Image 1: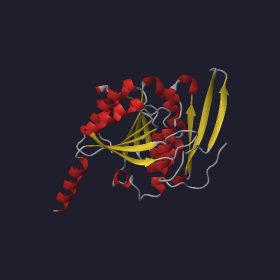
Image 2: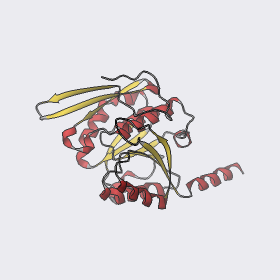
Image 3: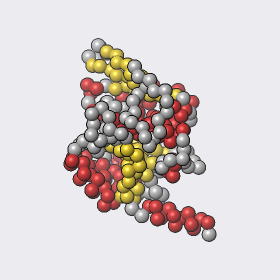
Image 4: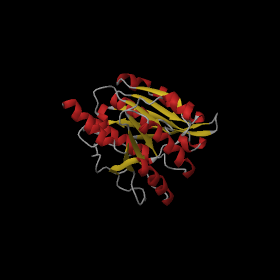
Length: 265
């Protein structure tokens, strides 16, 4: 069991760790069930996440998700940082998470901002995702957050159209993993970031593992403006820390500036 008592600066923090970790054996289903609790300091609330490691990668927590949750939590606590420009709005935030896995990021974001969040993944992942949403229903209700679970296969136009485009921010963590999914992911980002009348931000936490990942970023930069908003200090023997990127469509900042000026005239 680990406890974290002192808030970390989002610009100097090392690899975030869950507050508590417990492991339970589920003999009836013959697999280990990991349940972790994450304390969100800015709202003094704890969320519970179930992992099913034997079921595959999508049923486990990864470092980038921890980083993104910690960064969002610190934004909520100290709202004058680089995230303020797109997370501080005069309406209820609408967020979409890609490749949600266990749902940690989406559930935390809904609680932190009282946001309406849609968490998505492949159909076989959804039952555990829904389990985690239901397990945190009380915390979500307390803070005015709402989480909807939906299927999304990247690049599937029917799935994307069913979700709609009315989102302020798209979230993702450790989504640049399998190289055969680079193009479907980019197709999905084009749909949501280029298809909306307003500027939509994709906030992505990523831990670099292979050189081949540069191909994804090279293709992404042809369509989107990509910048690093935060980088963790490497830990646990890693050579690099988790980086958090901001993607927006090219020309988006200029368009927003022009719209703002026109409103003042």
